[in-house]
Image (cartoon, rainbow, N blue to C red):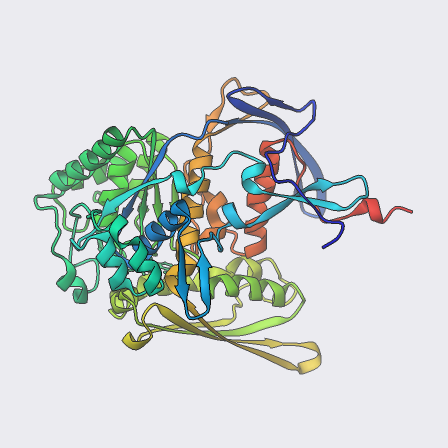
Length: 510
Ligand code: NAD
């Protein structure tokens, strides 16, 4: 399209507020907010300094649930991009791509050119972001199947692509994992043939050793651990059991049954200094885990990848309510036939998913007291059914009913069919790449002596997560575009650019 510019190489910001050294980008940034007391609103400015390490370290990711649909699709997809694999389907030749990734397939506006036209750049040309093809990937699974056969079992990728990647993946065999049949559906037991024996402390020690070996044997500088294993039931939170970091560590030592496998992975990861990401809905981040992460200043992010239906829900509810329409009912049906669907067919694991999917419109509702009363909320019903025949090709059917002008009703019905794991894999990749970037960022107020790392709870990744974890007291933002611009505006701040305002005043002043 004419007029719109594109920067295809790393940008350099020319400003007295930004310094590029060999190792770092230092940006002095004025953060603007407004304090409200009663009806008095006072603009506030806070002077911050961001410091971003430019060197992207050799990074490895350890996937928990590596042999599942997401784990194999991500591994095969990144490998195919690395090898520039092409494959045939009845439509012709296909080329590997990273569609669905904001780090690799999205651009952000960086400014205007001399004709006042917008100029865009990929995120990785604004700030250094790891190239996914350089990621080292390994992981754990309770199923011992190698990643090539597991990719075939998943039935996600085209046959010819599977055939081409098979030899590259066949020697990748997941490490044994921690299995507790109490935490996932009983129907998963037939694939659990790859299990770490011993008590919880011994299991934790094994996981920690695995992480250390991975790092050492491959010369990896930074490891990120990501849970993409089956959804667990919620763990009970109890005083003395897991309410503090010390109680949690004590409970692991005492081999308490209520410590979930995912909690052991989070603890192992934190104790080994690795960022931990939870891609499923369960409450891995019990208070003891959060305190442990804060104590060790380790970044954590979760919960539950935001892929299809929820993404649309956070767009549509924003669109309807911020158009002044009163959204009164959302009914969402899913049916899917992959192993995730099989696991979610048990009431206790479905409940974790239901909780995760239910809160996603709270922020838009609470922000509008003109159309919703204090405790008023739309009806919101979530149904998930397991239908083996449709495999990974998940169906999502949604109905949104709103009250409109002068007693009218507006009903929108959507039917979405999509390979679940092909939506999830690029999101998992973005979580890894952006979490890695966050580990290279330090921040301070101008008057502070020392820089500190980002807050351990990475709310900046909310765009990619259904039920975002945020620091205590921080509002949870669900609206998709607010989440997206919080990422790109944050990246702009790292290089001393003002936030995107969309005002286009240069075209409005005569
Ligand atoms: P999957 O069932 O294909 O894969 C999960 C894998 O985890 C399996 O290989 C299983 O053997 C393994 N596993 C189970 N318990 C384990 C443990 N304790 N340790 C190690 N491995 C274990 O499921 P999937 O489709 O890959 O989805 C993975 C997770 O991601 C699910 O919890 C799902 O709810 C969540 N999720 C998926 C999407 C999506 O769009 N695909 C979206 C949001 C969340």
